[in-house]
Image 1 (cartoon, rainbow, N blue to C red):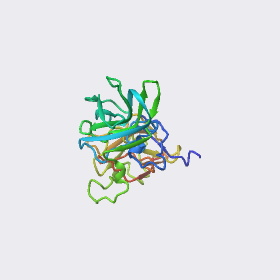
Image 2 (image 1 turned 120 degrees about the horizontal axis):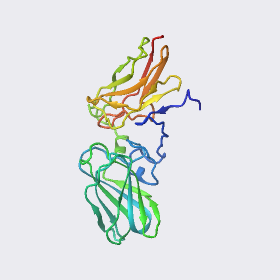
Image 3 (image 1 turned 90 degrees about the vertical axis):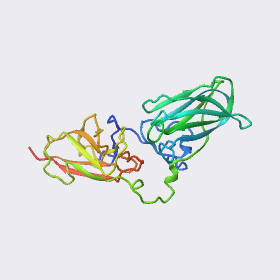
Image 4 (image 1 turned 180 degrees about the vertical axis):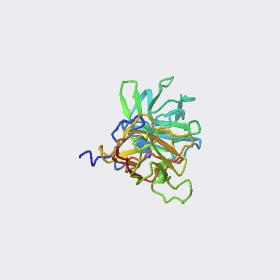
Length: 289
């Protein structure tokens, strides 16, 4: 695959990172995405992690089941988006009795984050339940994987999972057409698409959307070729209006530039309801010297 055909995405720190596709038998954002080893190592919304149906609703939970019962030494919870909402962790004994092993306020940290809890007494289990208070941290609080560490030194990843709700349900249902369910669209760019006389001294490209957007490192600026993609700075950010994303650039005279805002699986431009923005192609040309 050549540079002319490869699609690359800029992350928040402008690193080109690999994309992790969900297995064919795992619906995006379903509880099954929290089974197995972590596969959403980058911070941000990922289809390969579990997400609840709605945000900021209050109590939600995910239950993980493991192959072998062990004495629980520790539980490690891998969070890839908006950590800090976990409110308690329980385990289930042989008779199905649910026992609390941790309850409190999870420290709010930057993603990705691994939150570890340890029981204060000896207890054996092969099933874990993690409760979240989704009002604590705004946005989707996504969990990528949960590791069960046994007193014998064993380490297991979940084999099965279920949850109180899942964003995957939105994928298979026809949704009512409302302001909240419709995707955001690009309403303005600077420079304007199709411009052929852009000043090469321009230092910022801006894209403005029709709705308030998720602004915490949530953008997907995609190139179709290295030759037509502008040199970019490290401080991509949103303005206070929560709708305008600013991309620092270094342009050259007499050159055609091409860039997508969202494209295919690279769709991190999202509104506050997690709807991906309609893909938008920006093409412009700078003035010659």
